[in-house]
Length: 231
Image 1 (cartoon, rainbow, N blue to C red):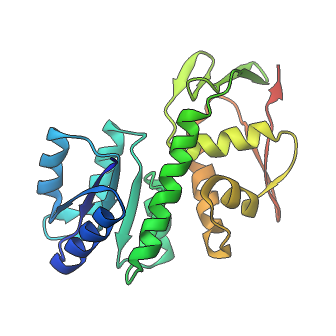
Image 2 (image 1 turned 90 degrees about the vertical axis):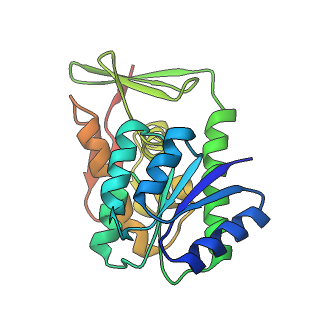
């Protein structure tokens, strides 16, 4: 049973989400603030963190940044009343897998969670038998589909689950041009136009990590293309 932490200071919302997730087959535990969830992490790391932003004892964005430094592959969903696009982009820049604005539908929340776990489980269970190598000038990238590990010049790169899906999808379809809509549909199960900026945010984060080398080209007005040459 997947363990989910729900950090929310509003008692009605927190208890409602906990109950709805429990009915849906998850082990759900609610925390009212950052102090409580930090203590919970010391006892047990969850399979998913659902995080509010505006909390009485701190900022949810800052806490997720802290968590991602220790557990870079931990899935995170922001559930917040902060609806500005800049807030949503910030959430994804911090490594969130999803960003849901209040008011929200509990049914939609569960569907998003199920889709997220399904993608993660597919990565774990459908491990391939291949190790792929790509070159960009004097730099070599190795993508190990058995262990879901990526390295450049022998140095492992810490990617989130979402970032791994994007890089592997782009590399697997190289040298084809890939639209933002294709990335949303294939890597996130989203097809909403308003989420296309999310793709740009993930690409920005990925490029910052994939150094040295310039592995992903931007095709203006279209999308992206993996520029590494297969060895």
